[in-house]
Length: 390
Image (cartoon, rainbow, N blue to C red; front, side):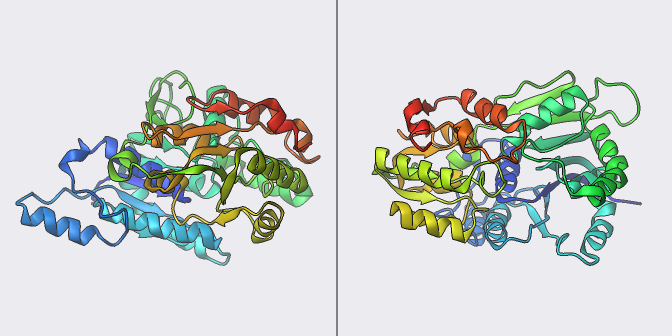
């Protein structure tokens, strides 16, 4: 007989793992009853647990089971290992499961996870667009399915599931020729089965279940779907408040790497923003290429910072600039929550349509504008700051 697994989470990025911790925190009761992390450093959980035991506290019940499906790039893997340490300090079980890299790794991972996926009562996923996660979803029998943010992609997920559309990332452009079309056709049944798993209990037919979206994004859940706001209460309880510096900090994006923005336009926009706002540091996105970052440093004189944790935690721990400037991205929605009450201003610079590449998705312009226009508690930079790079 299979032993039920109360909650099972699948994450593929550091931000997804952070948001799973935020979701779990909301289900665990008041933070004041739990020992704080020591300086936010992974590996200190034993000291926290020992202190709690010495104080006569009862050991906590086991947390949820988190399966990390790491990507291949070193920056993401490094951040994921740091986040996994924080998750273990919180009392959660963390399993590092390689599912990429070619060969038989995907099939081996699927075989290793299949039993627990079928037994889980609640399944939490960080990226419903992931093909590997969609493959796992075909095995799900859970009563509840939870989607936590994988950034602004949540906005597209809500829209597409409401319309019953195929799950496709907003920046993705069809291609790959005949082999790509063949792969799409072969994968179509898996994708369709995964979409059915997101059918809320209010729907009819087999496979309907409770569906919750845990998000910081400005979305409206469609019929039968539960929406819960992620206000980064775990992050605020565990870290900071930060020491503020006099200058401004810039936040990098992977818009060049995803083929949305021209590299030269992006570099000139960063240079103009740094000069206008007196920025001294550039927090690189984990997907930004070393060549691009080297060119940015040489052209702007900015200090390039490669964070070893998601930016929400880095900013909350500090030191951080009194102003944080970003292009349209996830952080213009998450940082106002994470930095609430600290005195930090989050500013967002629009992406000028002239910066877009010829191969950018037709949806790119409208989607990026929507990310900016719906951001709460941020300062919109004057249009000249965006157009000066053109």
